[in-house]
Image (cartoon, rainbow, N blue to C red; front, side, top):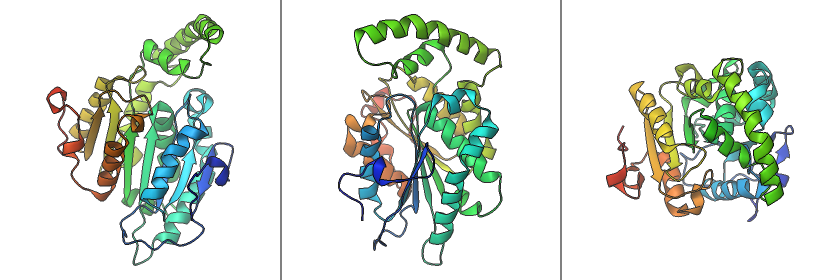
Length: 304
């Protein structure tokens, strides 16, 4: 059984970026519709084991019989490595997914996967994972047949200011480091941003398109966008634009908007509302009453 204080050290390291937890004992639960597998694709900068553990712990309480796969993100994979190399590095994750879903796919339990992606790092990893699964046709169907995806604080746009704001999270929070970071980081990111806009390097714009491409998650996969107005890295209107596009393409998409939650830390504002949204989303229940703390300020309505 899961411990009260789970951590990445209790997971099996499949690679330096991929960690797997599997319940040691079969858990008897009345919730036969619970996911067989929860995949957490973490963010770049600030995604410490302690912060990731907050999500792991709650998921283990919600779905004690589920396996949990954690895919950590890094700048090389997100922005620089060839996508073919990124997908190749995800092979161990794909093998674990196929094994888990094949094992749980019996007559009494329909295997299901909840893919939870955080920020652009998680969005990049999650989309490449889906494409990596499709590069082999062995046991792919269970993954996409009952897949649901959470977009947590993503996707934003590729503006330089947002790019810089996201990168600063990785800079130590002391005056000297912040001053040095500003002096060196901004010019470097300006060059990278220019190369992205010129099409030399892949950009957030590319990832936004990939996340809404039907070949990535399929057109019937349900989506939940969880995001906040008070996010210096991801513009909330940019998330809504992506949600609008998804709906225009016929994808079933819902959303929950927070007022003051931190980037990749929405559980700190209202954990009850956050996890109730996750639970209802997986169960296919209505979440319209959770959509916004102030419905009058909401541009979009959570209606399919």
